[in-house]
Length: 166
Image (cartoon, rainbow, N blue to C red):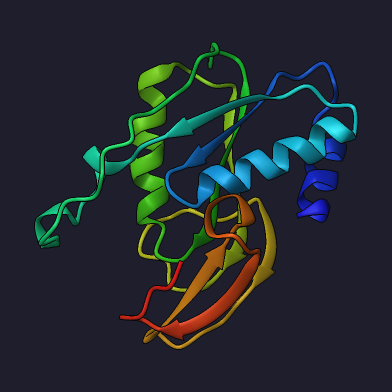
């Protein structure tokens, strides 16, 4: 995560308004940790959260609907550089939903994507601008990311697709 913070710090000058927006669930603790590291580098950042539940294209397949958290963006998005934060990018569908929700809050200067894990398998034309690791896994495997603030531990591991542990 330090490498991602360093890349953001070097890429965007202090005059640029930088906003980190975490995608519920696991993108939120990732964005919060990333923001702490940027602040330690002397950088000011806005921090927000985005709920993509209403923009998911797979809601009909759920037997139990996900909890609606609600988006929380308490700053002006217009002309800000927005870094969408999520723990894993795989198909790109979460990115599409997050962008749909985000643009309802304003018109950012640009939107980039930061993830902890970038794995192949895109179904949508999105790519990570900043990634901690790249993992090429079989389709039947899932990347699980745990955060101390949510799960009591920091951990990244792989399980069979149907077994989500974090």
